[in-house]
View (cartoon, rainbow, N blue to C red):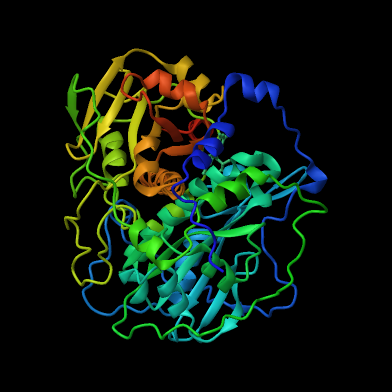
Length: 539
Ligand SMILES: Cc1cc2nc3c(=O)[nH]c(=O)nc-3n(C[C@H](O)[C@H](O)[C@H](O)COP(=O)(O)O)c2cc1C
């Protein structure tokens, strides 16, 4: 029986958003202590499935990172990934890239930034026959860099149907599905975890899209699907783990077969994450209220926001000055992803050049191929080419920032005019103290060179996309934030995602942000550690 259609009952979306806001008061009233012995495993481990090892030897992904994050694959014909391509894409999106020892044990770090290093997003593949891989449904296991087969056979038709025949999915040899496990992140962040699904899934997709571009494989983010059908295919117990987004990968002229009449229920045992788990019903409620229940609902859901008015205050417009082709960093995307880490302390005394800052803003805010950001393009050869025009607004988030130390740019608050490739000044001033406060009183945004905020008009998002628009707004911010991380590291400086005091951010940027909602924050600048290391090296 199909679930009730609740996506347009947006009181549920607002209730979740309002209940999970941080404020000066809330972080003091609702103190949460971490239960260390109960800390969840950062991996999903199937007890009885044999690993299918992924190849570990692959050529470096050497397309310049700044190109890889700002472009899409340019291929008109069929493009089918082989196992080596898949291994690279999985590694650079969700693979284990470093392990750090500390007195209490070890921390395993992955390719993309993730709140609390808790890694609550898992990747699954649904593919037809690929070179070196049988058709099937697989789980990617980063702990031993292998796949585990959950189902044998070609189930792409199930995904094609669940997405109401989204053209890029229908023609994809493989679709990667990203699913979030509540408890793995809620152990620390409680009910706010549902927002983190979007952020942490987004940083992963930023890497995935860049790796796909570097391999010249078309890829497109898809958020419109019948939740129950996808969760059932992957064998997810939706009270604990839910599909959040997917990315079609590659293109084939041989369409997916019809889905089987019956999808057997999967019951595959996995290792417990912790001795005990705490349930946060607000997230399950938000998920249910933002679920799509049939193909017709999915078809109506996808598309774009109506084109809005440029919200900038038009006070003073400063054109961005990104580096030209021949001055730009050419460091390869593979190397940059391996170098990336969140900056733990920024050097307050260092600035960025205006060109570096412009390059970061420009290259990380190009169009994202996604079913909520414009007309479907994946199935039409050539239509994904840079510059292709699609109807409607191609963004959900507005980008505002507080600049402390960018050469030639007066310190102050600015809004980014993405079409005009310019900054618009909101107010001038030294706002380090305010930035630190807004970022939950952390030193990072006060000491960075600049801190960038994602702000969405949730009224308009809910009106067009219902509660599921909330998922999309969080995801878009995470994708752009993830690209900002890569653009920073490609140019030799650092970045860190941040959480924030929701309503205070809006107040700070008002009247420009009035009536809108804070979605995400990323600080950028030079690492203090790096400066210390350089000083040590020369003395
Ligand atoms: C969405 C997001 C929000 C984050 N928020 C904070 C934060 O508020 N404070 C902080 O110190 N680090 C924050 N981080 C950084 C994470 O702690 C970091 O990504 C994680 O420890 C993994 O380390 P790595 O990024 O160096 O690989 C955030 C990261 C992301 C992706």
